Image 1 (tube, rainbow, N blue to C red):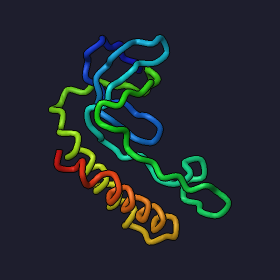
Image 2 (image 1 turned 30 degrees about the vertical axis):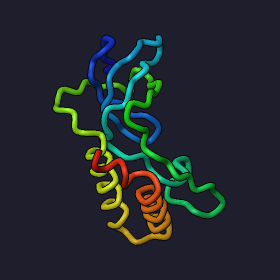
Image 3 (image 1 turned 90 degrees about the vertical axis):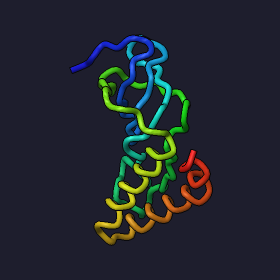
Image 4 (image 1 turned 180 degrees about the vertical axis):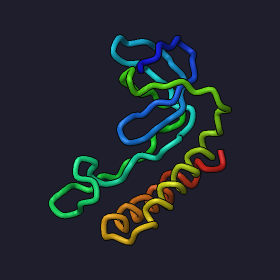
Length: 132
């Protein structure tokens, strides 16, 4: 079911392979322009069209969208959000922790590569954001 939202509404939105809490900035017909306020689910690592494979595919490193970054999201992927909005840094850290736990459940070459990529993101991009 597609909901109708107004500018300023707080929503949960699935974008690419991540899920975010954001604020509606503009109705663009088939999509909403949404400003990111927090991360619920960190984007998947690797080739999402060949998920779990390493051979013959390009392994993508995917960062979570930044705080206040804007995204165009199809209306069907936007849902109401009524809970308290967590701090962006804390939400990013929690989403990375959840993804790491999922990847460590099963020891596969793909999961090891995804964990390596996630660790690189933390070292080079996320550590300074976590406590903001």
